[in-house]
Image (tube, rainbow, N blue to C red; front, top):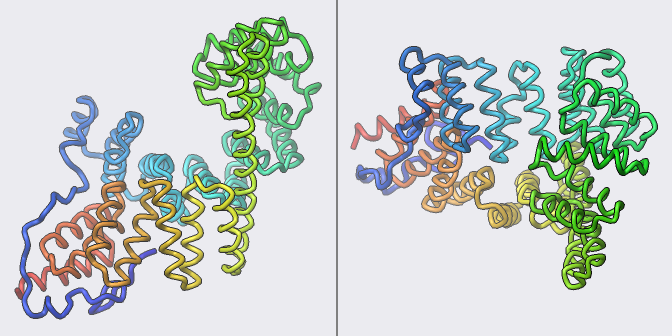
Length: 482
């Protein structure tokens, strides 16, 4: 959604309206425009010292990774953009930038940045994940399939494609691919793990059980393998063996809800209702999302005589079941909508996205996608309503904030556009286009000094950005004249 720059206008709106031509008043910056790098983004002393001695792209990428690991996304974006300023082809910086943007749910920017860039395995995985998160499953599969042509023996790429196939219920394709990598790498634990998980997902427990035992012998303290073996033993009715392995899995990784769910079910089968309750309640606390967990917990509570609590769990079970059904319907409709849009049938896509929104109203990405389709249809009122709906669900969805700002800018409401673009740069200070759009809005309000600061931030992030360079020259000339 880039703005179009011409000799006298930005995005079709005059840079300097009539009142500006009568005399520009230079305003003092009302708020501190956040630069691309500030002292508030200080990292740990060793990394800062490394930057002081040698400001390399790798050093900035390492700092960005540290910020990302410590939940300081804005600082991470700044660091990665600083690294890319030094080396635009730094795969470490691009990988860190992509992962941070994905965590911020800005899938479109990841797709835009990586779609045409040379990619190693990590960047292939990043782009595929962005497509998958954006519910563009065909594109994700294409990226991974093409990646496997370049890296045919890649376990990570194979695992991602197997997972995608399984997610879309393409079980035969998932199993065939997993079987191939397992046959190719018989001594590779991760390759064998992919095959084991695929066998479990497809319900081939007879083939999965001996493989699970073999892999556990190779890595006896692996929590995932302990859990998978426990699951298979539970399914086979060998509760004693399942209990042993699942208790070990919980001990190794106490914050994973999956072995706790399995252990709870095993303990319930062994008539240990109190133990089952403890494990199932802890699983729910850790985020177990399956409706079945609430149903099983309700049964245990009823066994313990906790009738009222059991009823509450049954209500949650029904609620989660409906949510799961609605979400599945929304994913189906959104996938069909994306395919329709790709084929050029935007009206069909809009109808399908509306159905997806109705099915799963708590997913902000759906009305945002609807807005993009409505924009292509020229339905500005519908686009605005969809964007406002997306922002109401997730106020931090900055692509929607940006798109709404662009609408305000097109409508000539520069103050409203400025507000939206400020929200955008606050959420994504490393996005040059957001700074450039803010500069355009400020320029249209005759706030030249502030506009120059905003465009300077855009140029710090992308020194070769043609639009920013052009606007910077126009602003300098305007300031000189007045």
